[in-house]
Length: 353
Image 1 (cartoon, one colour):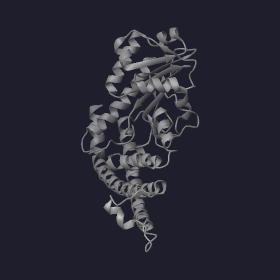
Image 2 (cartoon, helix red, strand yellow):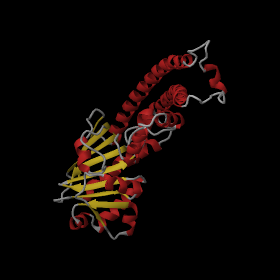
Image 3 (cartoon, one colour):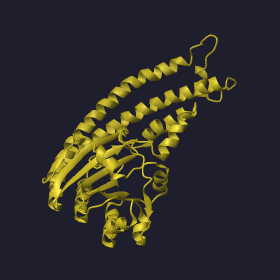
Image 4 (tube, rainbow, N blue to C red):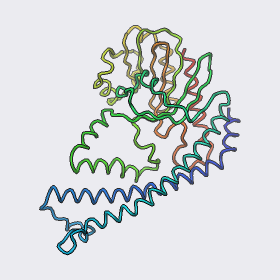
């Protein structure tokens, strides 16, 4: 594999440098666009504050003083807003153009790299999102059939007599955190501050393109046939307070119960829910728990697994996406190595059968 990785890097290194430059250009226009949007929202917040608090004086903001309406100039506040909108139009156009070129080059280079590294599998970037499989995996208590799920590429191949599917997905949904944020959006003035933080501030300080900022989950999602026949389901989730709260607050899995296991290394990293204590222990044998812990250490990111109805599912959090190149410079072979290692480790779960 090492020779294949070196060859793939050699044949795509020029394209990787081009992608890096295109991303820099995209981020430059993104920051200008959202900076102008931020100024627009700031003016709107100040205007709303004057409407809600008529006695409020804005003399303490010198930059705003020339734009306060007067008897001689009643439309003073309108002029800067119009000016910002005029500036925003060409900036948005330039951002959209730069973003399209960047994404096209990224998709072409990623397709070439994956096919060089894994010629034995099928790779497509036009596959529909595996909505049915994501819902059936029961990883996310807040996911429903109508949940927006996006696909950024999918691998399909035969490994150890099983058909393995590996997809790069993004999910946008109302988990507990987003629900609280959604509630704030109904409060005047505060809603604009929330929008300012989520859409302006994050995009100004981030080195990630705007299309990858808003996912509740972004990363790898895999599914394949599980040879053990199961009557219920067993779900292995990252051991965190957010996971516990989302599971407790959901009405989707009332038939579940917490599965208490005895392996301290496993229970330190994971929390398990299932419909049957005995069946869960049958699935999560000592050797399987050891392999799950090892898999988590290899990925070094939160992972999810579930077993049910002759199917096994795996998800691995990856905020930048499996089939998208990472932020920062791309002039090193590590970019190819990380992609190859992630896909290889995902293919290894077929041996869990």
